Length: 369
View 1 (spheres, rainbow, N blue to C red):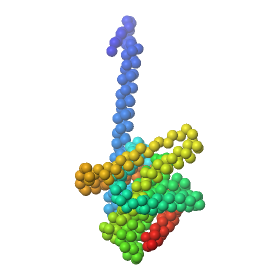
View 2: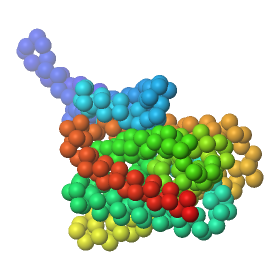
View 3: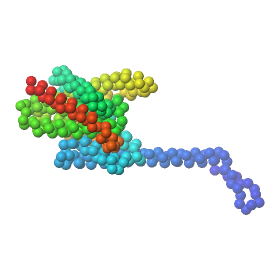
View 4: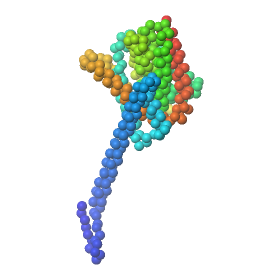
């Protein structure tokens, strides 16, 4: 750095900096501040991810306890996140990391979820099973939305619950949320309520099974075509034996298979209807659904045929997928206000419960025929 001294009679001399040196020093200082802010931002991002990780771990631990095991890891994780928000408030400094979990990890979990879908198994049973699944989805969505309007329920949460009831519970809600552009809070409410109500129905199926005049396979198929999530189907069908469980999962997977075409139809509907109201709004294509399809193809036609994947690895991937989804649900659950939960969720849950009950009765009568 160049320093000039100005002659003076005073003992001390004034120090004059060249303008270029002043600018260079200011530039270095600005870069240091930017680097510091970037480091701090990255640190809080990691802390936010770690925070959701810890709550998700607690949720999984809680789901191993009696009674809470009926709710499952997903439901327990959401419940803990909602409770934290209610008593401690939203951890604002960790927002970026939490949002990463509720958005990016959510999409990654949906992609990995595709590995569990055996397309060959569904298509082998013919179009009849897919037709039945399509009827169930249409019935659940249209009836729930109609009941929601009559009950003057919150339309966003009602639609999420309708889709979750018709297809595959929280996974379907997570898949359609980016398309519908629902608030994180509404998505979390929908996922939490579908997990809770679905668990109640699954336990009810289990209690009724000994009293029903159905074979194990028919009972399993009935569970798969009417219950909300794969976990609920497994919970209800497993006590009836392996054949019942296989039949239940097959029927359930036929509904899961229709998730992608349903999302594409929803995307088209949203673009046509939403675009008119908001001409400048851009609707992003849900690219993660293409990942879901690719994962399904890999799991159905590559793994086991060209690549030998041990069952332990597949089970590990399934567990990792469920845990990522739990972390995502924690991120969503932290956006839930208990006050708004009471005011917004009651009527949509009533609409969904009525639809679920009618769906159970009608599909049961069909199983008897």
